[in-house]
Length: 342
Image (cartoon, rainbow, N blue to C red; front, side, top):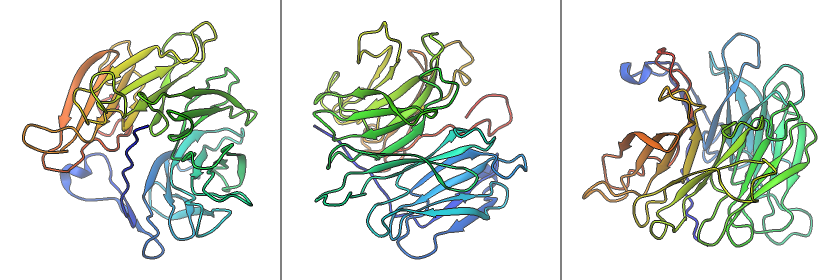
């Protein structure tokens, strides 16, 4: 299986207001508690926890002790912090996500992973994933891989309601489980695993996942999955797929597909669904990153693509060698105030 890992040694958070990038200022910053914490390795919009009308920010600091912390979106003040169950070794906070209100208390909850977690008597990492209360950080749901060495917990995201239970669900990636990686989807209402998406050696999954909305009209939300090592167009050109839990569909057959352009682009390293708002049409809008795309003479400068359904509507290139533009993409909401998600 082919799988490419990208990481950065970060040490703090920076949050900007709409238009702040053009003006050149941030509204707040927050530094990690000590060197090597890697605060900001993962960051997500959470929703309003403290009732001030401003969405909060959840951030992971997976190195050293391993922590997940929620920050006031208006001021940056830390509202709560939660350490991993196995400090110094479980990488708690490697991936974080806002998953909506799972426990019914009116406060949005947090998804978090600890991919280096080892169970008693394990020789290698097994990995864990959690849903945490947005109000307190207490555990609502907890899962761990069935075996070691799968990179379970490499990524987590809320995927809305795939089982029609009325409660949002969670997807967790394990990119080296089996021959081609697996995405595990869990019910937010029962914490039970409700379905899996398995990759193949030539189309691996598990390193990028996002909510996709209800694409096929079955009243269940679908899941957007990146397959950066997909070989359909060329070796490691990459792909991204939308999968549905609709029982009438053949198991493992995607309902939408996009493919990279060139050998080694790793298209699908990052994916995000924008819920049909950017291009203004009826189709799903998605952003897909290809961080190893070569822009002319620029090596690994990277590229990001915006699609509306199957139509490419916008593309943006990195501007320097090894910039890896597109290594991460996210839904920024309506940052410019024009009624369109950015």
